[in-house]
Image (cartoon, rainbow, N blue to C red; front, side, top):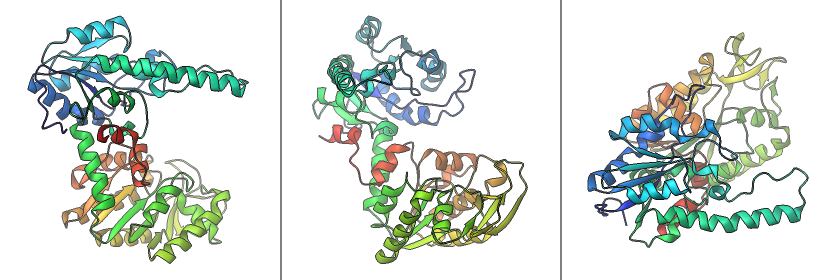
Length: 418
């Protein structure tokens, strides 16, 4: 069942959204992208004459925590939806059940943070550091058993289930996957955002127009190894950038000064280079770097060869030679995946490389390429540089997108498709 095929008139829909938005110290939302992304789904249900019960998490609370209460986002949600959204101070108590039961067509209810309960994630909390294996196993069993009741209660609020939280689709949590078991295939579906995310990932992995280029940034090879290995079976060009650059450079005998490096992954870097060669993949690494004498926006800077960084200096972005080489590869591509900036883009003086990559992707997209940007930092990059509208798709999922690229089946997607 698709959301467009379903008529929500007179129905109550439990909609799992990803409203895990950043808040400042005064609880003001600093980026409402994820909230705006869910609006088409919520508005469709309300326009049909249905009512919505909105479930989400915020942060990583270990129990009820004022800082992570969803009441902080209620005012902005009211403004975005154009209605007075009700709020339940819990997601499990009598108040939540009563308010869900009393919902009328066209009304909306926001439940309190689902992760205030250990049952949402299915992981025990409050275990002593010296807990025995038996105690850990007993606690895990107990929370798993109570998770069933938790999930059943959430499902009981509604007539149908809509998952529009791609950002949590890689988690087999109560509200993202387990709840779907309580609805038949005609009463569970993806929201519009999830539909778009699933299609975008499928296109970049299964409907490839060549050349296919992936740009992988990030500081650690260890966190990207499975993605890189999976991409080596699919791409024509693989640009490895960001902090990972220096692990690859040192592995080849280069001098990297104080640059970030995983010394225990040098052999792995060489193995990946060999695999790329065997598979005929053009592996592109930076040849020059913008270096600094301290990890600061105000540090002294200069450019040098990436394998000739002096002692006491560290690479914080790519240099002009690398920008030109990366852009050339990107502009000649027809399918592009970007995950991870080229440097410490949070510092204004080290944004140039990431901006150059973003602008090259926009140019390639104008010339007919399909471009998918995903992962928190890459999304922040294209938003910061005002380039988001120039790429084909900006994914809201960080970990979920990466696991999909790795070739893993995401529980939140499998639960709807079953």
